[in-house]
Image (cartoon, rainbow, N blue to C red; front, side, top):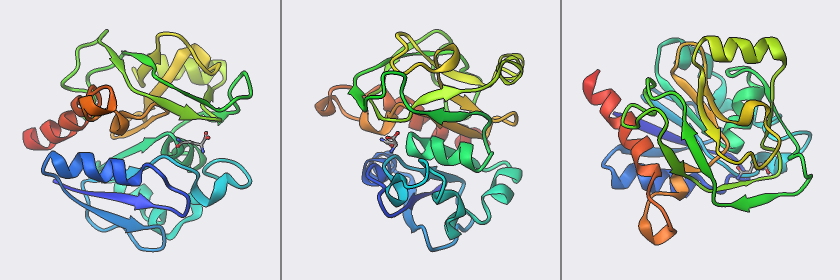
Length: 220
Ligand SMILES: NC(=O)CC[C@H](N)C(=O)O
């Protein structure tokens, strides 16, 4: 399996994302925002403040050259993982439904966070059990996931909700922390599994998510 981590001006979790894939022996490379994606099996949109978060988080990044072919990539069934700012970019691209609004308390929140695994039947979560509680850190100002009632019904009906907060930190509708598209090959999530990749960092629950992706490609 080949992976590419897109680097935007202002990305700040790109190295963590690269490192976790590298230490799990995935062939991984950085893709500068101005380059094109190739035939990577996994494209990772990392966290941070792409283009300074100007206009709206992710609103400029969605026009980056590196994302020009992202819809074809998704159509082909390849994987896309957007973490935090990456999730915001995916909603701006309309690759995922809904939007990320300012946190309810208007503060930037940086803390540990317990999540419940709602859906383990995705390429990103196949090594978890449904109902598992995992700890991934959060660090965002605009993580308040919004979707209207009809949209929420669709997400529930299609089993698209992958992670929910145990204690909702930001006001997200239905405690949603991460969702997949209908096809299941695009995951967007606000919490940071790549920052939970080593006990030295406080927690290594995140490894299971990356190992799930690797297991998915081994099966395929
Ligand atoms: N860690 C991040 O990716 C932050 C995302 C975004 N800049 C926000 O503050 O919401």
